[in-house]
Image 1 (cartoon, one colour):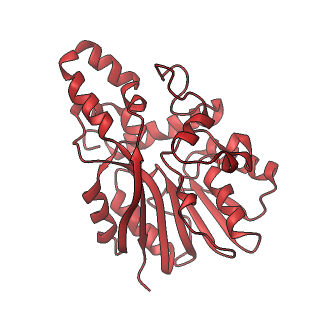
Image 2 (cartoon, rainbow, N blue to C red):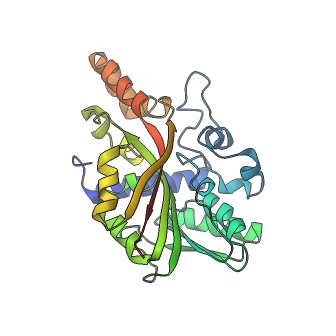
Length: 277
């Protein structure tokens, strides 16, 4: 993201997700997905790890197909816990977590996009989720008290920040001793081609981080027992069909192989880390 300022990235990300909230379209709407790839939010979500039973038990409008995994599937949440979702969007993971922690537990969703917040709160009302609260804020400066959270979840959001270290330090601050982070995000062992990193739209769509660099970021923030629990391939078409990337490759076909190699290297990974007791 070095080619763009943090404010430029944040502006484009906010606009992208405000558009998703108001139109109900996922990152892979019919206009951008080719060759019969998944085009609905349900199909996208099922392709990245959500079970049909997960999607059936939450408000339909909570699923916009914007993630890259299902962090609640491996979070091992228990009744009475307090859960924080970084970049909670329309609320899909908050609502799944809410059922696991029960009425004696609490789920807090933080998102910087007012349109998403409005949609999430509406979904919470429709679904009768009295143990879920949504707060406006940025993940680099969480509106959450120190040591007040048991588990942090997040779905393809940390890579959208140009200061991931600051996000992780904030996460460390709000976790109780022994608390855990369980997140889904994109990783790769191939460097981001200049054409891709130069596209603000592609950056706003969440680009991957080198696996080892990501793990080191957690350790640098103070976390221990840092690991990638599992990972699965991420559909290459989600990047190849980015408008900026397609336009560039139309003019520079000599870079086609490089970009395709990068796109096929991306995986959706589940990270887990713990704050020392």
